[in-house]
Image 1 (cartoon, rainbow over the protein chains, first blue to last red):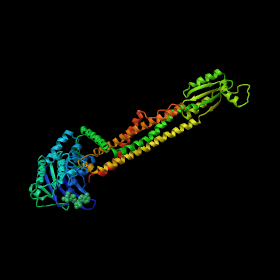
Image 2: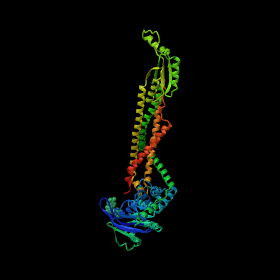
Image 3: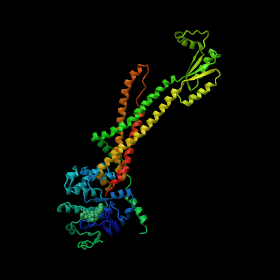
Image 4: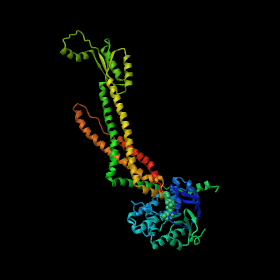
Length: 227
Length: 321
Ligand SMILES: Nc1ncnc2c1ncn2[C@@H]1O[C@H](COP(=O)(O)OP(=O)(O)OP(=O)(O)O)[C@@H](O)[C@H]1O
Ligand SMILES: [Mg+2]
């Protein structure tokens, strides 16, 4: 599903965020990506979503080399992803409904289907009562859950979540993790960046640890190991 | 991997969902209505833009109207531009009348009039008897044919005169055409001015709409970035702004049409009694439905072009980072 080969990423500032990274995530896997702040977790996810381009090496998703994609290909490719951003990336001038509905509008869904699916997605994250609120009227955790609802509203083949539980209390974190597990059981590949080591430790999934832009062995690695 | 290219091409096909006409049409409808609501919900700031568009359109249109009115009058004024053919002394009255009738049949001639020696004398005599003591034994004035040409350009008139010169009955030709030539070249200059004004002010409309769209893109930059992250194509992102441009063009065009008609009708009602005092009827000085339609269409087209150019310049800056 996701294959990195000798991938390096150097930002314009000159800092090498990722160096010579190689790994493979199978279709249908659920994988945690962990590491200290600044280790390069978000950078790795941005390479998969084609927000950033690798300085060298190749990133393949579903067998396709992302750097061969033109602008239109990238747009269509992103429609198959469910992306949860660390900074939420919500449209502040639009209602919660419109935010969650946006991927469906882009796909050209019928209004009746849009309404049904948006309500279903908001129900899953426990925000159905705030459907007509604006993001500015929501707490940080609620905004995060709007982002999660938007990512899963279209049944993506790949979920990429950057700190999805960063602003949530333990109870809600557990609920959201269960949501990801449900999708994973239906065949969706899930990659979650998180430094919530407690959460990661509780669940028995593969863990990739980043340190200074490289994959390292961690205490958690032995508990995962699906591949 | 040796078959990299093949694999990636095949996978690329898979990525694209089949085109969905219904969804595409729905998005057009949504963008059109959203853009319309944007204009209506911000009446003051949007009116500033479409009023400027209207004024920019009115300027060349008013010029055009005046030009049309002037051109419609030149067929009357043409009567001043007459050609007088003085006939040889030997020409009989009936030969003169025949000549006048023959000339009147030519396409380049509007009408002719035969003036006999006697008629010429009759109209000349009061002038002589009042002012001089001159006594003449016989009538010295020649018979003549007055030719009034149809409205045409200088070259055609000159060709007509050359053929008339060859006629044996004609002794002398007196032409009063210089001022027609001057009028025609003035009208030509005015026409070029209308075209030039039209082009300059179209560019103005282009810039006005372009700038408005640029500001709109600027204010919705983060929204556009997010939409791109969710898989929107460039066309999808452009669509609402193109509709915004088209609405500005339509509003501006309608305002221009209404204002132009109001101005022309008012001006007509002032002009009518004024010209009536000189026994003249006022020309129609408003745009007809076809001309108004063309103005509206041009307004929408130019505004759309302005929006498209602005988007082309500014949407590249909104790729997600
Ligand atoms: N746009 C950018 N321009 C320059 N440097 C960047 C940019 N984004 C990230 N970096 C650098 O790359 C490194 C990795 O950043 P990244 O955001 O991937 O870390 P992270 O693991 O997600 O951290 P956190 O857990 O705090 O979110 C950091 O040192 C950061 O300074
Ligand atoms: Mg991060």
